Amino acid sequence: MNTDGEGKKRKKAVKIVLMLLLMVMVFILGGLAGHFLVSGRETGFIGGVELNTETDQSVGGQSEKPHQGVTIPGAAVLIIPADETEVIVNFFNPEENDGLYYLTFELKVEIDGSYRSLYTSALVEPGKRIKKISLSSPLKKGEYNAVIHIQPYRMDGLTPTNNADIVAHLTAE
Image 1: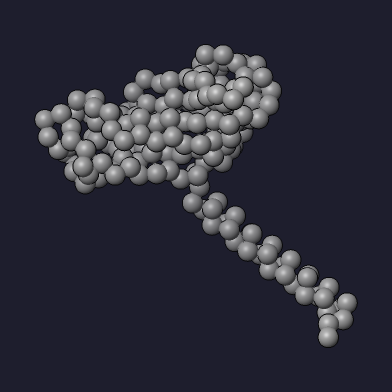
Image 2: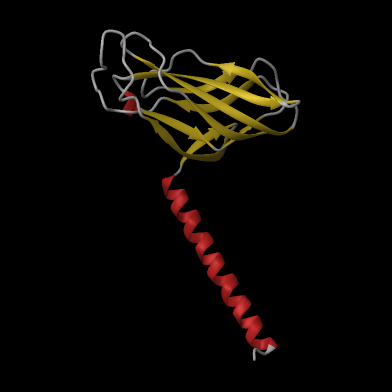
């Protein structure tokens, strides 16, 4: 039969193990993560996805590097200033896409139950970044659901390929 003292020790040991596991997970995720620098603050950036484009045909046949996917960056959190249209972001086309894909970025934010596009970029070359954007309208202070729609285009004809919607949490402060 357990005494109260043994039960408290067991609960304390479980809490310590859970805290250690949480610390290990944070350490691992931190090692895998890059960073967005938005409005002078670092915000979470978690990896990306690779879209398989093996079966996609470019204009005139296969791309120069068949069987290679496009690398897409992905954001978890964006923090921007409230009530302003000029905001700092870090949208980029990874160098791994060199010779293969341009990317475009579209920022959509959920307002009153539907998503509105607040920004759409021009083509971004591999290794290039968009650091500052102009929103079509400012956001009031608050928390928003957001989607960053990323559309790759083959460099040999500007043919759109598979695309990605990166779900993000946006804070306007």
